[in-house]
Each structure stands twice: as C-alpha cells, then as structure tokens.
Length: 484
Image (cartoon, rainbow, N blue to C red):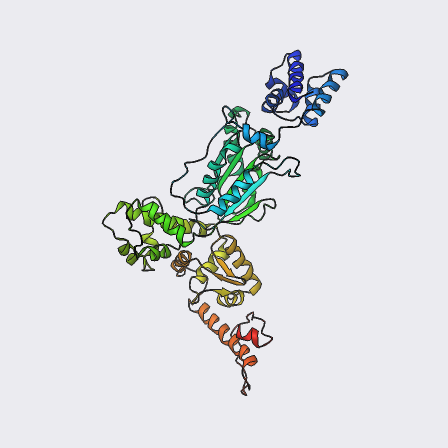
C-alpha cells in the first residue's frame, strides 16, 4: 500500500466522522498542517501520530489496524537525486531571503562548504541530523552577505520555503529578538493564524518543529546574539532542513553545528571589491594607491565598501587623497563612515555586548605598546591572575574582537585596535592611569632577568629585584625557552 493509499484511508476515516482537518487536529493534538500533508501523501507517517489520530477518531479495532498497517508499509520517499531533479517550489511557500548584493567578491571556499551542506544526504546514508552551519566572524566581515548569497544559490534544494529572521544580536538601539518573538514570526510565516499562536515558548517551539517536520526548508538566523540559547528553540527537530546562523561570537553551545569562521578578504578579492564598489573605470587599473587603500581598510569588506562608496559618490576625490586621510590613525574610523554605516558603531555594538571585566580588559589592551601579547603579559598589565587573564582573552577571541595568528599570542585587527585605543582613556578602575604600564614594565624587567640566568656565561653577584606585585611568568627551564 503506497503513501497516497494511507492518505486516502485517513481522509475516509476523517470524513466518516464528519470532521474537518482542523477539528481532527483539535481532538488528536496533531496539527492540521501535518494532517493535510499526510492526507496528500507528502510525508511518511509516524506511528505515534497515527495512534493519536486513530484514538481521536474512535476507530473500531479492525479499522484501526488497517490504518496502522498502512502507516507501516508506506513506500520509501524517492531518492535524493530524483527529488532534486523534480523539486519545485511549493505553492505558497515563504521566500524571505533578502536582496543578494552585487558587491560580493571571493568567498569561493566558504560558499562551497555551505552549498555542500545544502545537498541532501546520499540514499542509504546514516545521516539523520538537522544540518546547522554557524558562521562567525568580526563585525563588518560579511557574514550576512555570505549566508544570503548561499541561500539564494541553494533555493532550489528547499522547495518548502526559505525563512529569514534578523535576530538583532548586535544592532544599535534595538534589543536582541527573544526566541518567543522569533517563533511568532516564523510560525506566522508558516501559516499559523495569530489566534492559534501558543503563548509559552516550549509550545511554540514544538509547533514550529511539527510544521517543519519532513519538509525541505531553509532557515537563515542572521545576527544572533552571544548565546546559543537565543537560537536553540528555533532549530527544526527532524532532518531535511538547513539552518544558517550568523553571529559575531562563536556559538560553542551548538554542539552539532558545522562552524565556519569568516576572515577578512585576501588582497586580490579586497581590491576586486574596491573596484566593483567604486564603479566601472573609477579607479584606473594598477593605480598605485589601491593596495594601500585596502590595507588601511584592514581588508574588511564593510570598510572597503564605505571607502568605495566615497569614491563613487565624490568624483573629484582621488584614491591617493583618500589614502592620505586614512593614514591618520586618529581619524581613520571617522573617515570610514557614511550616512548609514559606521565602523565605530559596528565595533561599539560588539563592545556593548561584553561583560564589564571584558570591557575593562579591552580598554587596557588599547594601551598595550606591542604588536601582540601572551597571557602572562596581559595578566601583569591588568594586575590579575594569569588564569583569569586567559579566560578573558579567550572570551574576547570568541567574540572576534581579538585574533590569534600564533598559538598563545593575541592581537587586534588593525581597525579594532584603533577602536580599543579610542576606549583606552575611559575609566578602568585604576586611580593612576600609568599603573598598568608600570606593572607591565616590571613584568618585562623581571622576566628578562630570569631569562638571563639561562643565557649569561656568569651570573653577577647581587640580588635580583623582586617584582612590585606577584605575576605569572613564562616557563624558563632552558636556553631555547629563554631566547624565545
């Protein structure tokens, strides 16, 4: 007996009872949407749902066994290759993906990874999980543009719809969207009338999972806040859907998610984006200022777009003149601003999302005199235990406000560093603003003296001065470690 035969049998039982699909849904607890899909033969029935339907219909033992037997022998769905070849958008399926910008360059590797996740699992594979990709990166690096581009490329794989929610995790002046409000939007998009919207979060989430069960739906959760708790209730419960999540923080609480870290653009792609944004012929090919201009923008897509927009709209502005303005570190962020985009505002929303002790450390790091730092130096600068320093540094790393090019050493992206230096003059709890730098200098002096014990041929008599405050020191057990 095929899937359509089961649907016809269920419909006959319902009509014999004189009920509509909504009435059967009220009595059985199975949503009217699911009943409609089952009767149409578009979903493999679950035995638990069939039992609830049979009980609600008060079927006699013979009829009940017929319905259960039909459910057990439903034919398998077509193989993914056939499904892909014949997929068509379902009439009325939501298509909410935002506009796919033309100012998009590079990211071929990242797009390939996302599109690979969009493909259905091969026939007979053991894959039975919802596919989730958590895309993280610093503010302005182009996470949303990447997710939207991938969504448009993969639309044909998701005929049951493409849903989009801006969760406003880092939007100036707007509080992050709560899971309950996000589910309200998503359920309305899936056809749930406002008067049937459940009040509590768990019931909304359960109804959402039921509506998405056995469908091929793409869900883009853009601009998530710092916690996986915001997105966890928005995840489907059964395979077939793809969820793309963008966030400035690594959402380490999503154990089953494929993590995709988005970095700044390589130089060739950054230059291509500058030319594309400035307009045809605006910047002559091979212009000597081009490479320095994208470098001063930190190869960050948002900064490059803003610079390109200035060149596009101010025809008298020469690229070399813009380079001269951006060379001034004190004014660079001010120049990377237009009527509705601002690098300072982007970094400010990231800063606002930090805990107070993380904010204090970022301010202090704005005063750090070197290129990069290790945990011990930061502990000395802040006057804290090195284990606390490591925890705070790792949190700033997960917020994508710090980089780690070398294991154990932390540094700023150039533009984030400028923002941190602008915050360095704010109150950090120190009565004397020079105390942190004196602590750091004392730490370096003491560490150098200890390292010298492994390097000097003879140790001069005398007592090594003790540091002004206890500090963690690197392990210096031999000459190579001392030299390092």
